[in-house]
Image 1: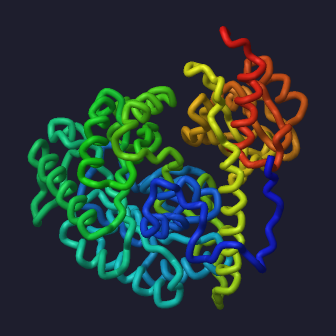
Image 2: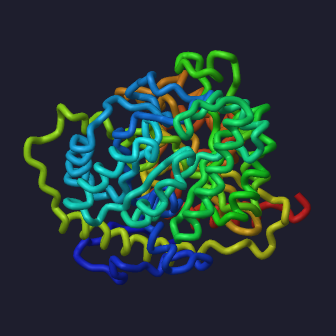
Image 3: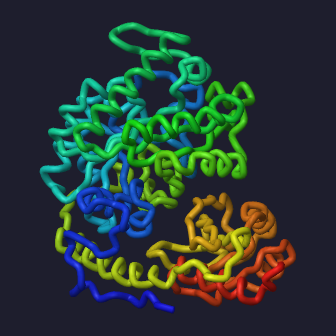
Length: 474
């Protein structure tokens, strides 16, 4: 099996402009746009970081799942911010992060309101950033109501990634999600509001696709409201050319003060979310690695370093070392070459029975490698192996790590086991005797035998071994 040994940053068999790791089903010009974007490429999220700046507080719609007044520094939830920034403050913060985090590749504005309704602040921030940081990708997240009015400006600013939150294509369902919208200087409610929002979202999507902008559609799964309907949403956005569809779970906690939280609307279980995602297969390509980031998130997906870069902690003088950023990209291209070579080992087992499936939880810090201690893991990546190969299913966040202050927390362990109870195997870089015994007792095989090996080939080899060891009629 290929081992991902550290790669010197001085050389690379692929240039920074391209990589042989590009997916076979993706046009080169599209791969060039997404290969360093952690939200648009599952592969890129292992290597690159994103940053959101909270410069756009105003919003033109009200969602029953949103309350932008609540904030907890330890919470990951869209719309949440600790600091609202002016465009000047936002640009300065971006430069400070770029100087400290060479992995930073994307600057997104996702609120905490709507980036396009607060367009002047959004545009001023982007204008200020690109002057001093020309290698950054620009990205916008919007509810779509104001989108058709700004497509020309989006294209002119070279913003080639836009995310639209589309929770319905049926205004009857939309009226249950949106109490009101503010459009053309009027507040609209009920079916009229939902109808106008739907029409504007579809128009904006069509206009962006026609101009070559990549569009990701976010949809919040709300049990009993739009769960079955999201399959229709998926078909419609695929027909209109959306690049990705991200079906994500409703976060509904009464403490957040949202309408849904206060009225008892629950979020979906992991099984319910997976069921809807699976039902959408064959429609628009699904994003399964979303972490539902805060509107001021900083760092790799699955982590948030925003509290390291609050205004009071920014240095007086900020200098970005572009040679360091370029060296990091060269190093990643070399790692991608290794990972692409490793993926050649991932082949369907010729004798595998169609119904034989292996579900695997992986503890990783990134780089497509099994490189995280079980007790330090903040999340698990979930994979499915069967006769067709290895497929990524999604990420599951660990609320409380097992190792805290050098000691193992039994209460945390029980919650972690419940989190991956449907998995057959858990792969990590290292695991202690106690959690190993508890996982085994729960029917989950823990293993650190593949420590520091690539994820997909390791799972493929494990699946092949299990298939070989299992009688054909089992």
